Amino acid sequence: MVDFVLAAVLALIFGGVGVPIGRAAGRLVPLFPRHDPDPGDDGPPPPPTCPHCGAEIPFVSWLPGLSRVPGFWKHGRCPACAQEVRPSAAVAWGVPIVFAVAGALVIARPVEPDIGVPALLFLLYVGVVLTVIDARVQRLPNVLVLPSYPVAVLLVLYGTFAPAPAYEPATGPAYANLVTALIGMAALAAFYWLLWFIYPAGMGWGDVKLAGLLGLYMGWGGLGGVVSGAFLTFLCSAAFGLTLMALGRAGRKTQIPLGPFMIGAAFVVVLFGDPAALLP
Image (cartoon, rainbow, N blue to C red):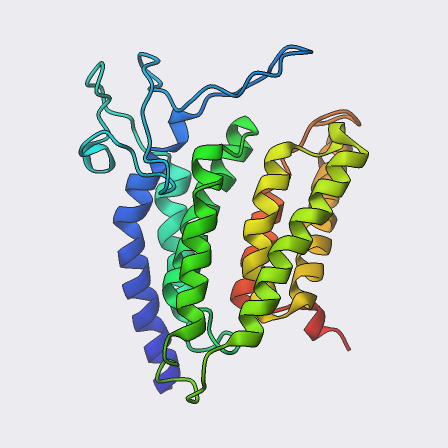
C-alpha cells in the first residue's frame, strides 16, 4: 500500500514537471517542414523555420531544442513576424504522460542500478519530440539528434557515479553498466549503418544517427536489451505496415517512418527492462 501511494505521488510530481516542458517542447514540432528532395539533390534539409513567415528560428548548437530566440520556449513568438508558434498537442500531452509513467515506475523499474532520473527524463523528452516530428514529416532533425549525444553521455556518466537512491541498496559506481551502455551505443549505430549501407532506400540516415543514442540507454541494463530493442523495433514496424496494407491504407512502396518504433522500443526497454527476460 505504501509503495502504491508513493508511486502515485511520484507520478503526479513527474507529470507536473512534464506539463511546462511538454508545452514548450511542443513548439518545436511545427518548425520542421517535410523535406522531399528531388533525385540527385544532396542538399541538407531546411533549418527550423517559422510556420507562418518562413523565417529561420536559430538554435543553440550544443543543447537539443533550445532556441537562441529569447523567451521562445515561454511565449513561442517568431522574432520576424511576432506570431505565436502553437505547440503540438501530441507533445504537450505526451511528455507529461510519459514523465508520469516514469514517476510511477521509478521505484519499481527492474533495471538496477538505476540510470538516474535526469538521464531518464532527458530520453523521454527528446524521444517524444522526435517521435511526433518523424511521424508528421518523416524527419529526425540534426539540431535535435546530434546535440543529444553529449548531453545523454554526461547524464549517463552522472548516473554511473551518483550515489544510489534511498530505495536501492548502496553500491559503488556502476562501471559495468557504463561499459555496456557505451558498447550498446556503438553496436546499434554500427548495425543501423550496415543496414543503410546494404539498402539505403530502406533505411533513413536519420535513423542511423538516432540509433547510437538509443543504444546508449538500452545498453545500460545489458546488451540483451539492445538486441531486444532492435528486434522489437522491426517487429512492430512490420506489423504496423502489414496492418496498413490490409486496410488498404498503404502499399508495398509506402514509406513508414522507423523513428517512432525505434524510440518506442527504447522506452519499453528502459522503463520496463529487457522483454526477453520475460520469456520462459
